[in-house]
Length: 198
Image (cartoon, rainbow, N blue to C red; front, side, top):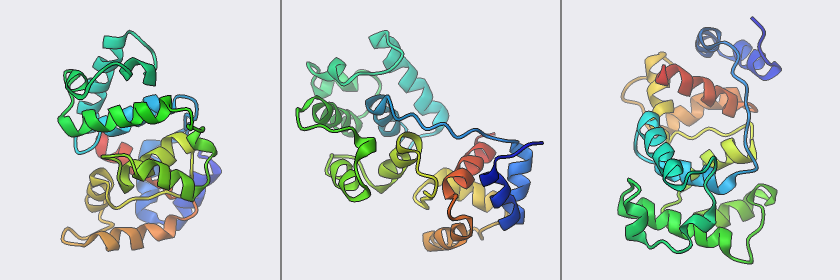
């Protein structure tokens, strides 16, 4: 089986991760810089729920607007109650409204072109966007290769199930363990998500 250079690096660094990568096979890493608003709505939708549930809600939202990718203009004339009717709670509806206003504003720049500090400042000032959401954007839109977040329940579950981490460990233990995967912690994360999602 052919793996990428990054996957080969990880297979050499960690025997437990090697087993997961070998079982998964090669996973292409394809960040999407183009549809950033669409990606952010998916990230917000997926907060605190399973990937399967998030995908279902997200696809229903796209169907309501009859589009392949969501556009910020769809939300311009919607209020928070209107957005809630798409299957979201109040906080997520508020977050999506704020994101749409950011993208519609004249001061908006391509987020993928911002430096780390400016990207962090821009996203974290939005209601409902925290470090986890920022990390997901850095992975799936910007395409950063060395992102790992112990705030992600799926990653913690995968690391526990594979015997990397003891059940009662604190979050710092996950970050410390993941340090060995640098500079390709993103690729490790993608394999761990696939492992836990089946």
